[in-house]
Image (tube, rainbow, N blue to C red; front, top):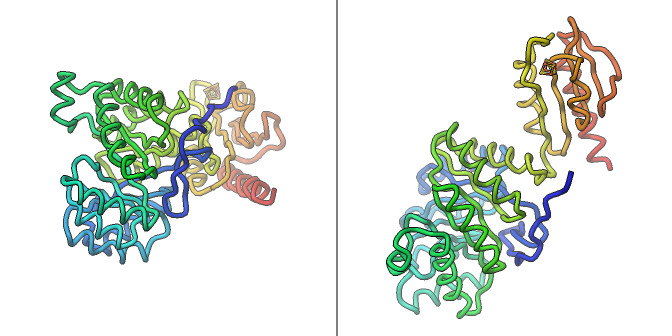
Length: 360
Ligand code: SF4
């Protein structure tokens, strides 16, 4: 199976202690849903996101109260913090002063040249990158008039317009997103953007919907883009707890072999040959391995007919047999385990493999 060739020609951009772009892995982001000025609630949510595997977190920064909360939030979390700002350069300055690791602002929307220069100067001094966020729903009027409706070319043109403003001020720590809720439009826009410039791309299918529909839509769109080797950081947008966004993002990356720090579960759909209570075992193991930070593949299969063969790629697995399970490694059966001990034994084996992986 061929590996996805990742875009190494994107420029590496530092965000706190991480680097987006270059040869680096695709980084998972999410955004808090709390009021940013409510430091307690915001920090608590960020902690939950961190635990779920979120690597960079963004907070809305709509007013001074939010900007004032940034230093305290920053002090209490471990992952890089991004401030999401629209238009107001004073909020951008305050967020940068407050210690954010990145800001999301479109320079073309800031207004007068001196204001843009002030933000760029502050960002440069502090080594804070800027994400330009193009959204199909809020393209510049002149671009909309030119194309008639939001198109991929129009989105890339908008991105280039904002990029040029920063480049003219000799600022290059840029990350770009081109979000659309229309999956095909987003795919086309990211493809064209990858051809048009080499700044790292932040992927997202915006306003993708509720937990179930949004997950499917995000997987379809982000998957299509990632499969082309495009994208350096992703954010799944769901009308749900943001922890779900992180879980979905992780699964999408795993599906493309783009997560080296997460375990994967392979489980069969079950059929009439089933010999064990597979669904509950699969759910229990899935929950358990979600905390394992090693690329281990675990298989849970209903029977031994096709089981081990179906999961030859798995590092470890279990296939149901009458009243017991056959434990196998890399497709070979190693021993039998009574049904009531299956979950426990599998967990032990997973821990052992994780230990071996980290000892390497
Ligand atoms: Fe059916 Fe066995 Fe395949 Fe599961 S592993 S789908 S139970 S044949």
